[in-house]
Amino acid sequence: MGKRRKREIELVVISDIHLGTYGCHAEELLRYLKSIKPNRIILNGDIIDMWQFSKRYWPQSHMQIVKHITGLLAKGTKITYLTGNHDEMLRKFAGLRLGAFQLDNKKTISLNGKRAWIFHGDVFDVTMQHSKWLAKLGAVGYDTLIIINTFVNFILRLLGRGKISLSKRVKDSVKQAVKFINNFEQTAADIAISNGYDYVVCGHIHHPEMRKITTDKGEVMYLNSGDWIENLTSLEYNQGEWRIYRYADDLYAQSLKISKRFQNNLNNEEIFKGLVNEFMTVKKNGPPL
Image (cartoon, rainbow, N blue to C red; front, side):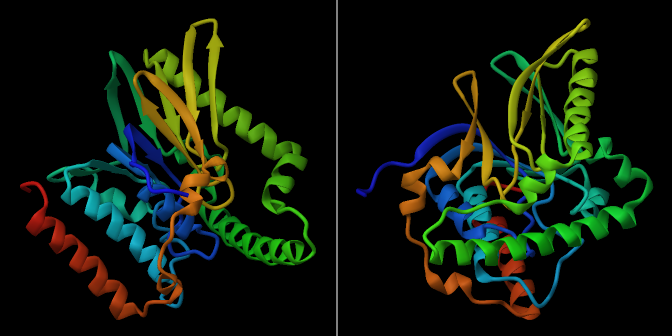
């Protein structure tokens, strides 16, 4: 496929990348990021998975995501990092501003005269509020299921059959999970409507969605950016319109080549040096801090 110009996008919302876990599709995300030219990116929580972060597993492809994002900062792209439950350790730094970068827990922005309320969404999770140990145990189980799913799909490819998503099948088959998603979406919509927002944008539940929710008090557009574990989705906003981006439908991004050396693992010292070097590069070459 011939080379073409990067797609220019006003706003991109990405959540639930879970860097540092086996389920993270960092190479696919890197291809997507290399295919676009965003004016602004909002990283809506669970970008680095600090719950399951392991010094034994941090591939260069994961570091390359950090490198690419800091490279965008150096070019003037506005980047907002909103904290989630898996990177909640960063919440103590909410309010941090470094040039075009800012760190917050939630964000309200104006888009063509309409107000968007953006946050991760774990605040609505009862398990998170009252049984954090159970939520963390569930996260480990989820990551294990993703690893098993990878092996199953490898076997299916050898047999000439299509991929399956075990986690999605589990979610769709468990009524309580479906009810949780519906309650999550409705709660977010109700609060957004009561506060006069036009859009409410979340992540957290790994369920990409875009739909208008109407109550007797008004209406709001509910949006969820999905994840980069199983759905490989984001939200894109251009010229007054939202859309759900799906990597599976983007043949151009899939065709982009990335170095196979990114599959190599980094040790703890290399991780630290890499993060420090990227920060210092932005500080030296990026917009004034």
